[in-house]
Length: 507
Figure 1 (cartoon, rainbow, N blue to C red):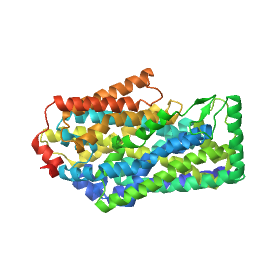
Figure 2 (cartoon, helix red, strand yellow):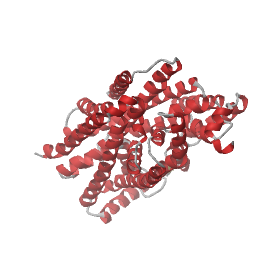
Figure 3 (cartoon, rainbow, N blue to C red):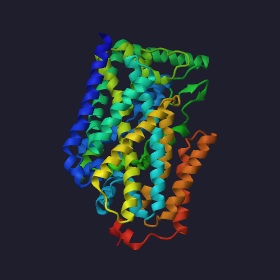
Figure 4 (cartoon, helix red, strand yellow):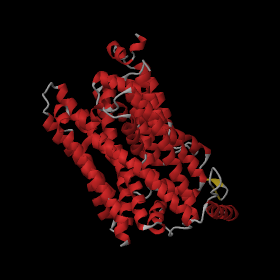
């Protein structure tokens, strides 16, 4: 009976998502017939403020926000909450800095993807194709972590094996994304974001109740911190730097790079930037900046705070177990089965919303940015029905590939996400920001900055080279900027026609 009560809300949620995917596919068939790629990949530029905010929030709030992050906060304490709070500004920065400029350029050049914007600005097929390849590689890596997290949660709830949970979970998210396209992703993302908030509040209520109230919980945390300071084992959960054995486990340089990795340089995440091409008017983007900031703040600070407070309920985890198990354990062992079923939808929703957004953006990189562009370059007529079949097939194949990789994934999801975030940001940050706001930016600079910065980022990550305790995003971003500026001064200047389109206020 308990198993049924726990699984019922999950299966109902899955059925609703599948129903939305098929319903949206049916209702938008006429629009897709006219221009499949525009409707399938950006929803016909029709998103309102609330939906735009929720789809951006859901895309950004991945499984690490509900699983890995709170798990590390359970281990290290309030310092990890400060660390995670840098993410609050993400939605505001992306929409505030790039929102209007990308929307104007998108309509002027009929851009459907971020790669379309890059191709229009730099007139370089090589840069565009390289950028598309980067998206495919790093999106697949990110999806690997999301599938792993979703499968582990589903397995913990159902008692099924990891592989069985992975397959079942993957079928649902890949199917509704493949069938419905961007509109389905936007609507289901909104539903997912709402469910995430509900799940967070249910979990918070359970933690405070089972822990005997905040006073008892804090007494437990104080005791654990005092023991850690006295013995040198464990972490001082009350310290911003979470000392262990007198050494900061979250040093100040890591805080600084976190502000870049999950704050300022989120401007370089294509899965977020493409939302700037999808809204319908200025009012919508202004509303989304407010809604998005509030909801991201509530989720990021709220979930990580609950991770710390859960130490008052869950005193330890099995030796050798990953901290990724903390939240699933809390949900399955310390909550009423029906509430557990509702709560477990939160991290599942975070996972599914991120995967669906990555699938659509990754599919667009292959279909729109490579296949369709090659057709247009040869002046070949494009059959929208054929485009539809190819888009759906590519989306499904990308999902299946990520699932196969997720059968034997790395241990901790948060590090997979951070590596992928850093790679995408290094490749796209300066290409987009300088391309949209600096007249001297040209294709030579963009190529040097993107390829050189990404190469240095990946190499230094692979060999373990670091500057102090800074994350390697510092190496990627700084070297990318230097190479971009050098290339822009030694390379051929952008033609006047393109500059007039991108910087009309200067002519």
